[in-house]
Image 1: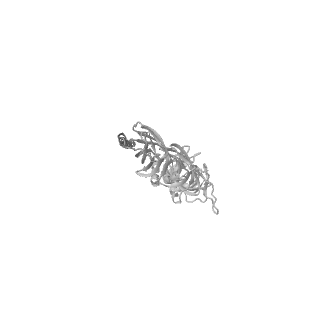
Image 2: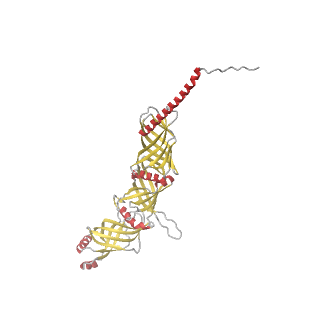
Image 3: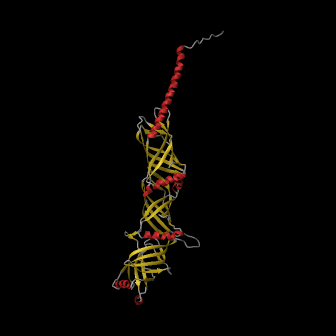
Amino acid sequence: MPVRTASRGPTPRWAARRRPRARHVFIGSFICLALVTIAFRMTAQQLVNASEITIERFALTRPMGDGAEASIDAKLVLPRIGFGAALRGTELVLNYRDQPCGRLTAREPILLGDGGEARFQLHGALSVTEFGVFKQLAGELLVAPNLTLGLRGGLTLGVPPLPLPVGAVLEREVAMKGASGLDVRIVHFSFRDGQPREFPGRPSPLPLVLEIHVEVNNPSSFDFSPLGQLQLGIASASGLRFAMVRTDSNVDLPPGMSNLSLSGELAVADEDLERFGPLLGDYIQGQEIPLQSIFLSSTEPLYHKALGGIPITAALPGLLTNNQPARIFERVKLDINAFEDAYSLARRRDLHDYCYIEGTNPLNVSLTFYKIEVDIFYDGEWIGDVHVPWLDTPINMSAYQQRYTPPVRFPVRLSASTTTVLSMFERLMLPNGLIYVDVAVNLTFSAGNQVYTMPHYDTGVEVSLHL
């Protein structure tokens, strides 16, 4: 039996009018949302443009090859926006002098609050993209009091009224504190004899061991923990490198004061030995010596590449004994031949006598002397000299040996006026007679496994007769 189907009939007018109205509402809502999104995007960009960023601490930890973990403490000042906001998916390019050197990626959202001053921490990863530029940044960071770091990148700003985050572009120059040369202060500097090295078939040289303790002050915004175990070259201000030292352990360089211990060997190139002698002489005379420490290597590859070759200046205090410059010549005993001297004086000739020299070794190393040249001054006037081109038997002095008189008669020439010589001898002939002279000396000696020629000047050296 055929089934009768009900006729649908014409659509009611009220239903026909409802469909376009719903479509219009949907389109209108979409347009409103788009306009709101555009407005918020413009607002977000204006907020970023109007913001002020201050980086108070930039810490690098766990260095790994071409990067490290980064932690930044910063202060952000925003206009009041009336609602809470956050930065998400932040990735910034670090620029130095308008050149990119690295990329900083944040792992966590950064809560900005509703405007005003907000302090926040950014935790993420720093990857170095251009080591040449990064090395320039590291060099300025270590020596300059201030530096500027560029930040550039896209920010994603999340705001509660919108279901989707809003993008903005950050491009800002941020002023930061540099390390100002780390204000290195040398609190201990000493040599000592090293342990013999065994070389089959030849004598074992004894390189001098150098020990240094320093205080460094890091006033910068940067915190490096760890820098690794560092190797540094020590050189004079003119670039004369004379030692290589290494830190005893891994070095941390947080803001503030740190203490470092370094040890190594005195190692002067053969072609620089002549230049090093006067430098050593100034040190023994108590003069402050401007130095530079040059980063050579680090056990952390990141800092090995970033710091290599960068110099840090320091001042080495001169050697003092009881707050006085160290002495080498203590006393001279004249062994004269009175008859020959009288004969020479009568004919206005130089006097040729002998003397014994009592000396002190101011260093904590063994010294062997081969050559001695002395100019003698009395009351500011040059009166003679001691000249020994080469000692038949070298003179050995142990570390810190005091007032040692070697069994050597040194030839002495007196070339003063007759009046001056008679005045000197008149004082020397008195009971316990003494006069005082100044001496300008050139000494050739070995210390460790190298030979040096060093100038030296002592004042107020006692002279008496050898009886």
